[in-house]
Length: 271
Ligand code: KIV
Figure 1 (spheres, rainbow, N blue to C red):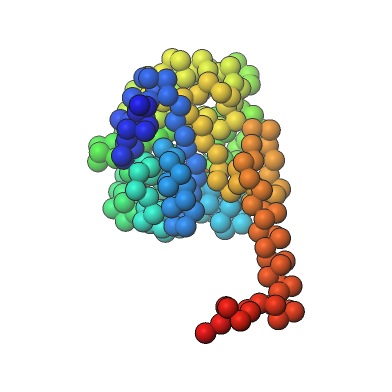
Figure 2: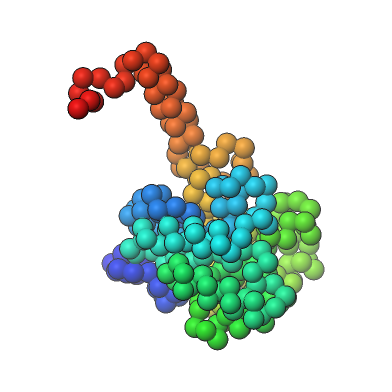
């Protein structure tokens, strides 16, 4: 029996044990009750209420505009649906940078108002004071290094990060600083697979990759991307496990035809 199959409720300790035993961790995003119920029911280990909700749910170009109130709303919807997975909630841009007291207040709001189990925030040594202060309240923190979309205006593009030695060394230093500060896990986004492998090996906490190769301790994808609901986003790392976009398109078109032709509702579909 695996650790994941034994876990009635996944905790940060379950993830730690999974890393220890070499069992891969599965993580997907969710932002609403209905999809979170399906994702949790299918047996995912971690549900991330990602600030990618800004793109996927609100149609923004970046994750910068989403607010703490929006994230709390999404996390409340998800939390109601989840029985087993660990629910990690992204701290949005502006809710933790710069001032560790603001970070603590934001994280407390998330935990108190949503019932989520942990928070995630982007960055390394620059945000270490915020991470430590959040942890004084007993709130588990997941880090996020590599491509950090909240800093898109600093990077200028969404291309692979840490290809050069200097940035790769900083990423390793940041990862060690996050582990030493007490983070229970770190997401690596869009970094070279070899670097992700090396850093994963040098950490005792689990790493979760997105576009970071096969040697992270787990993998995460944005649910709507892997279900084929977002058409215009096709990075190399994305595997589409379904084509729901096409299925929804066909279903809606058929509904339009049926209503227009009075084919729907029929005799059995009325009272
Ligand atoms: O917001 C999000 O969906 C994320 C994942 C890309 C890891 O942070």
